[in-house]
Length: 323
Image (cartoon, rainbow, N blue to C red; front, top):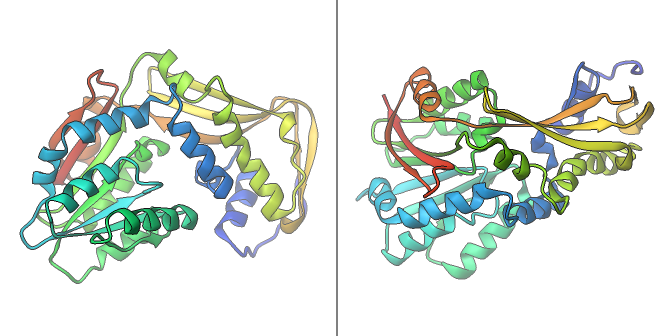
């Protein structure tokens, strides 16, 4: 049940929370996990033994940094544009390599969190003051629009690490890749990490760690709604519930109401009723194999130029060019 509809929203957060909680089934995007508290929680998640993704991709980039550098390098220089940069932990391996070899490039990290961008810029300025870094706060789609209108012939390398594309369904992923391809010219590259299908137990434990940090990360969405939109979610009355379908390779996370309850969101003039065991879908984390990636790339007009995997083949970084 909801109150009289509000038609004007001050922020995208307000609009997506309103629309997501007044639809059925209820859903709110995982991108809203990230405020200052959420950023710190995700940094903790990346250090967890169960969260294999970060360690696998770190290993890949560290092992193949020389080959990757050769692929990226251009005599006239290049722009390294990272979508969803976060704290740049894995990218710093390449930045250090580029800086040590005096490679001509500009690093343009993009993230929805201004807090993370500020921390990243300060860290890079401190360690490698010679690196030209130009952070930009915003969503992937806003940034891609700007890239499509660029007025330079300089080579562009777009990076999307951490299997961030996994937060999209396959049709959404194709649209996302099409939008990237439209910004690319001959010689430009897309370097993208994609988590691979594997033992379902490994996947599930990555989203349901023994320390409860992933649960806190998901519930931070409710804390954020409470703080920013003046609501009264009781997070103790919601259960974090991840599931994984090995057939489709789709991992999903939900917050499940453990009882009948009513939540009031004052800033949205909204009341939401939950029945016992009703859910809010908060996240999708898609897993892939080479056949799916080949299909995605063809649908988007891209071609796989190279690929690198960790020693256990749990994660793969692909390099794409325009087909």
